[in-house]
Amino acid sequence: MKILVMNCGSSSLKYQLIDMENESVLAKGLCERIGIDGSVLTHKPAGGQAWKQEAPMPTHREAIQMVMDALIDNAHGVIKDTDEISAIGHRVVHGGTYYSESVVVDDSVKEAIRDCFDLAPLHNPANLMGIEACEAAMPGKPNVAVFDTAFGMSMEEKAYLYALPYEYYEKYRIRRYGFHGTSHGFVSGEAIKMANLDPKSAKVIVCHLGNGASVSASVGGRCVDTSMGLTPLEGLIMGTRSGDIDPAIVQFVCAHEHLSVDEMLNVLNKKSGVLGLSNGISSDFRDIDEAAAKGDHHAKIALEAYTLRVAKYIGAYAAAMNGVDAIAFTAGVGENDKVMRKNICAYLGFLGVEIDDVKNDVRGENRIISTDGSKVTVLLLPTNEELKIARDTRALTEK
Ligand code: ADP
Image (cartoon, rainbow, N blue to C red; front, side, top):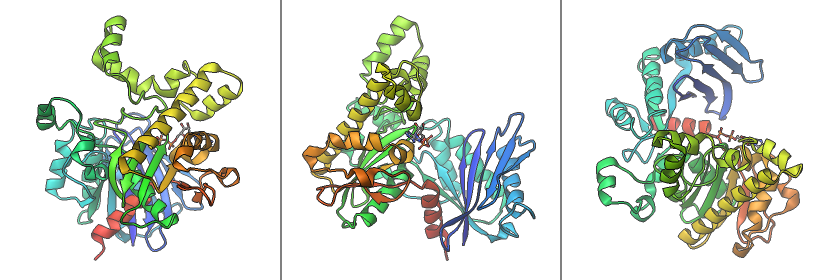
């Protein structure tokens, strides 16, 4: 069974064709600049060279047609006929309170995705365009929607409600949703398997530390709390996002800098985080690490503040679950930065966390990095959101 995984942005489209017999990636690629001049497809068959093709892609429809053509191309293709594709799995950012699991797309699902446009105005319209373009390009094939917010839907009211007038929840659905859910769900499941924990009761904390970053707490694979909120701005310090701040700062800065609220949100999303804290050095941890190593004070503080924030969330989530069996690190920083992992875990001695420096000296591999005597199993687990989307798509469409 072959499954096409789609991740559509407003002007881009990423795809992977996965053979579910052995969960291997047959080909992957990316369409960029959809709807603007200079549209280009980059297609890479497994084990082969990347192939670039420039052609106009006024909408996602033309982009998907180019992907189909590339997949069956004589020289660069990996299948003979698009009929070999059994189903298409789509990343959809927001499912509101409608979906706590992935779902086969029908008219009511499309209506729900549309109903969540105001909750994810940059992503949901593009995700829906991708679904409709696939329906047009491959009529009759099942499409599955895999929601980034689904994992967070198992939170209880005490975790998802904000302490605001209740009418805002009723009128506008203002609550904690959580994002990166596909990654948190995948990594917590893999952590339970790898650490040999009880799948019904395991208490797992996942630290998804990429450019965007979030932490989740789950019991038996069901999310009980997560750090991103109504939007991805809340929680950890990120590459360019502030994470948690005193909300009154917004009014204060707007008044003094003569900014509108929208402009201030742009500052909080794009100019803050380690980029802001480092006084503009970079949003990329490799640059910050390098500057800190050369003695730059701002870079050093940015790293320390980042580390402290992650550790504080882990401590809070251990309290929320009354214990923790495993802590897993994933995404760009979590998978590659052994110093960051070690420094975060240095705060967690009170939980009985003990890192093995030799085991921790690794990148991007599935591995337990705590000592045999550590009370909590600490793992490095590369995330694979595409595989999770493909697995859900298979489970919902296999006859
Ligand atoms: P996203 O999917 O949110 O864009 P990723 O999970 O790909 O982000 O993570 C990207 C980030 O990972 C980069 O911005 C960089 O800061 C960090 N990163 C990648 N490699 C390393 C490394 N070797 N050391 C430290 N940080 C790294």
